[in-house]
Length: 436
Image (cartoon, rainbow, N blue to C red; front, side):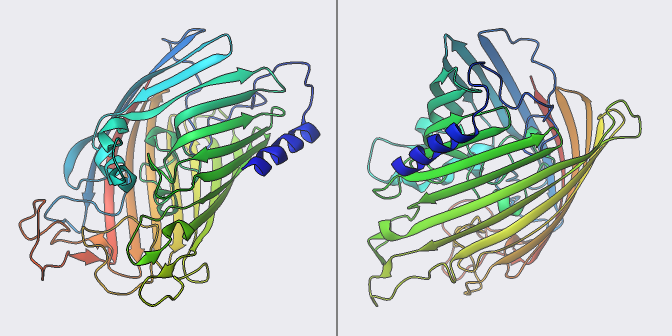
């Protein structure tokens, strides 16, 4: 990590421009069109110079045409219930700053806590750390800002991850359901970061954290990462992210599980190819391409002494291509998206049931198509209707019999019971999002 920081500072000295004047990063254009970015162009009416409060409310209704009897959606990290009206997230918080010191605190409540936070296994390692200690915090950190170049920030706490392009907050994404490649990558980190803006177009951000969307550490080592963003013009943006960590839960079948390391990389290119903001027809058009590659390697089987699958087999690769067209002065938008992934040892996909996969194999491939219609009468509210079509190479999506147990309620299941998993899922979503 020390060498990464030295490299970052060396690069910033080469590309820094106009270090005598303090400027705002990414101030050379309006980037509210970006996928994974807040679409609001107006400042909150309740914000002031020192204090910026925020309110987010997110509601959805989702229906799977597989019609699972236990009403459980098992293939998503944002939508968890079928054929029910669900309050997904309420988030209240604020940003405060004074004399270059700052703090950001956002709470969260709703069903998204069960979908993501309650699945963190690191809170069961040792004592003095429980999911309930932190799961109601969506984002919270404190830090200090230096008026160097276009800004240098150092902060520590829980902050949102940029790996995967699409945001944890649904309002910031072009579609409600995140793409599958983004669904299986981090949503938050617990650690420290340094943000360096050598000029208005670049951001270089090294990370040091406990693990991959985990509150604690899986093993003895910390995890590290780096994010590099470049926005050449208002209509072009790129970002590349890198992650390296020991994200293996201790297991008696593995000798020295800390030797089992994970590497992940994703990069995104976003281009706005049309912009007529006052048009009552097509007012804006853009596309985003998000590509992923990662692997796991290291560790041995305790009984045979054989090495566990390495990057030749334990890899992850996938892409998501989305195109969005805005209409009527950006009050309406249509997004189409296609994606695919391959993860032969299944170390990333969300577990389809309490007993995991049921086919006994190891391969996993998936494909998806998504269509989204947005109505945005103002900067503060979005109405969204979405259709998803997803396929997998092995049974993965919840079928009619559900994925809980024969009684459809949480609890122990008979030894011979198998969840009903299918290779196909068609789903519709109606969602509303308010943000102030």
